Length: 189
Image 1: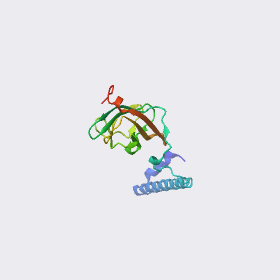
Image 2: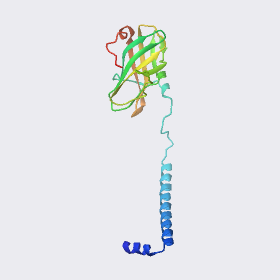
Image 3: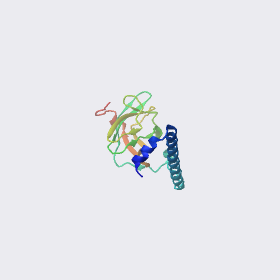
Image 4: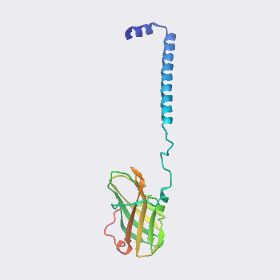
């Protein structure tokens, strides 16, 4: 069958006939697409295993966090005021992966057998600290606690996760000597 002759034959037909042929062709193509969609949907549903694709369990209740081998978080200095205790820190993410920073309930400062959680985590400009630290970046922040008395403490940051391996939670523990941290070498803004 010659396509050129078929097109000329179609062009010679009256306008009403050409419109009917157009709608018939559109209907046949639509029915074909619907059939393909139904078969794909049927095969997708039959291949579902019933497993949860997203683990919605509460990560903060997990106690099996792995200890970090490299130090991502460093404390630069502390600042004591009448009603607050501030820890100036920086996070240096040198990996190729995005780092999820823990929430305030996952950060604990232990001083003289008492545990404290920060009431606020901010950046150096007073804005909320970022939750996701991009790869190959360094972020500076402040942990703000209520008034704390003591000379030494342990800062524990739990539930750190990397985006590509979010099932594995990490923990970093830092021993702090408050007397030494009161006189910083250099603080970046």
